[in-house]
Structure formats: C-alpha cells, structure tokens
Image (tube, rainbow, N blue to C red; front, side, top):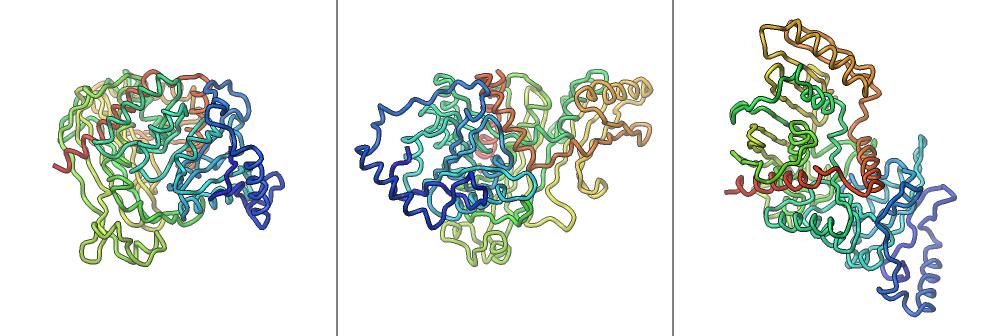
Length: 491
C-alpha cells in the first residue's frame, strides 16, 4: 500500500529494539526498493482491487490496525503509552510535515525506549500535503485515531466514516455550531456502514467521579437529584487547567495553533466536553438523552492573556505567528480558553465551567471541583489546598432527622455496594453531617493512564460490534450542548 516514495518515511523509529525498523542512513535504499516495487507493479493496485477492510472484530491479537491522522495533540501519543494485544504494533501515521508529527513520533520513541515496561510500536509514516487523501486511498488500517487540530477534526471523522473506517477521536469532535450538523449526519452514516465512532472520555475513569456517580445511584443515600436553580444548580462541574505543564515526565511543548481558538476551539467547546459528559453520565447513567432534553439558560466566555515570554516558554517561538496576530492586544495574546454554561438537562439545573491559567503554583496542577445535590445528601469532589490538590470525595447530609439511619445506609453503600467492584474503600466520619472516603492508591491511576483504560473499553466495543445504545445519542446531545452554548456566548 505504501508504494510511493514521495514524502514518505517507510518506518520511523529510533528504538534500539531489534524488532523495530529505524529511520536512519538506510532510509534511502528502503525508499529505492519501494519505488522499484511500485514501477514493477505498474503503479500499484487499482482502487477497485484493494482488499476491503473488514469491520468485524473477534478480539484476536493484532486485528485492530491503527492509523493516526495529523497527530497535533499529545493525547495522540498517550493512546500508545501502553501496548494492547488486540492492536497490531505497526501504526500508520499520516500527517503534514512539521513539528506536530515530529513531536508525536518523539513521544512514541520515548515510550519504546523507556526502562520500565517499554513499548514496541513500529511507526510507518507518510508526510505530505495530501495526507488525508493518501490515508483514505491506502487504508492500511481499520481504525483511525485522531487528536490534533480541531478545526479539521469534524471533516476528518466524516471522511473516515464515509470510507468505512472506525474512528477513535480525542475530544472535541466538533467546535462550531455550523459544523455540528455534519457530525450529527456522520453518526447516521456510521450506523449505515457498521462502523463505530467513539470519543475519548478519560474523566469517566477517574475513581472520584466513579464513586460520586455510584453514590448518586443509591436512593437510600442520595434520595434522587434535586432540581436546583440557575443560582444553585443541582450539578456543578468546574475545572482549572494550565498551559504550562509536565506530560510523561517532560515539559509540554504546545503547537502555536493550540492558542488559536479557530483551530483548537474555545474553552466553552473544548474542555467543557468532559464536564458536560460527566453531567450526563453521572446524573442520567445509561439513559438515552436527546437534544430536546437540553435548555440553555446562560453562557459566557472570557480570555486568558499570555505575554510573549509565556508564549515562548510553552511553544519555543520567540514571537506570535501571523495567524495569531488577530488575537493580540497590545503585547498580550488573548486566548478565549475560558467558558461557563448554565443549562437544564431533563429539567435539572447544571453548570459547567473551565478556566485556563498559564502555570500552576509549585506542588499543584490541574484541578477539578464537582457537586451533585441530592434530597438526602450532596456528594462533592474537591481538589484544593486542604486536599493537597488531590481529588477527594466528601458526602454532606442535607437532612437533620434520621442521621443514624442515613449513616448506616452510607456505610453499607461504601463498604458493600461499591466495594464489590472497588474493595478497600474506607468511609471516614468527619462530623455529624460530613464524611469522606479514603481511597487506596491502586485506584489513583492518573490522567495519562486513563487513556489506556478508554482504549481498552473501545476495543471491547469493537469486539462487540456496537456501542451501548445510549452512547451515540448522548454524544450528539453533548456536542449540541457545547456548540449551542458557544453560539449563545457570542451573541
């Protein structure tokens, strides 16, 4: 399939692993052989003669063949931080030339060469302006993985699905109200072609979010979700992120386009994807939601200002590129990475908000706050100074009578019901109406590890040949919420 030598790196990997081909001084002979093969074969197979990609999976080793398209975000590499029996170790990368693909391959190389549990990925890379068309023409794999420039992502997903490919996509899958109908239609095409589109919702695998959800499902403990008000929503999800951070043990270098909201997307349609997803997943577990279940109340957006020095620290660029000049005021780059949405979901008030700062204070990092207000208690997740910036679950009773009965129900929920899946949790009483849960370290996987957990789940869905019946309608509802909120915030 890779018969053309133009702009093609046959096998990129600098690993010392003898099983992995390397991009080195032998590259030109490899390309020469490939070109000769192409000439002898009369230019390769005609499109009609290509082997048809089979979308049925059995769980067999190596049957899932990944194609990574335009990997501009470090999340693309985190999918490959671990190996998976079901995924073939050869991954086909299609991308435009530039630092995005180079940085991606460097991260994969780092995973291959690390001392502890090294991976053994073989990256076969094509770079050129026609990278999308080339991938669709070659189709050496059956699953397209995409994490990068969000301005093009909806089109990438659409084209891949039309070509009969499964899609494993980093969030967000759409960043504008205008592109939302395209994504919605693409889900219909995916159903017709029997392929699966799935977005990477890592936060569902955070243990504190799981505990909050499980407690809210127990009537004797939670008592059902309050309706709430716009001023005091029944559900609140807030997160704080930082442009400068460490990833896989190294300082993260972000591409300049990450700071262009026309390419990355504004905060109200980017990180809020996770928060809206958690609202749906936590408040209405395994329930099919529709666009008509959403009623927007308010939406707003605001900018984070970056100095030239800060921009250089995270991009290694000494000045703002031309495409960012439109967002420069004085000497500051204004990045509309912050947003807030207040809305009703099936009559319940919810609020989600995201804030981006440049850099976290020493000893801290990205933070998450959440509260679900029930008739009997509120279940909270805090990650502030008092919690040493580690997510911690609290349960606060909303009743004054029957506290003894409530205490017993809560203890049973933690020690028996939830412990059936997560043994070792310990309920600790702080005061008459306040408790916390001590969580064993083995469940504190960390953000990067959650990418592997999501991948394992997607592999199971491929084997099953379907997603849970609520996943697709809820993805559509989620992206309807974020894109309509952006429209409202800009009015």
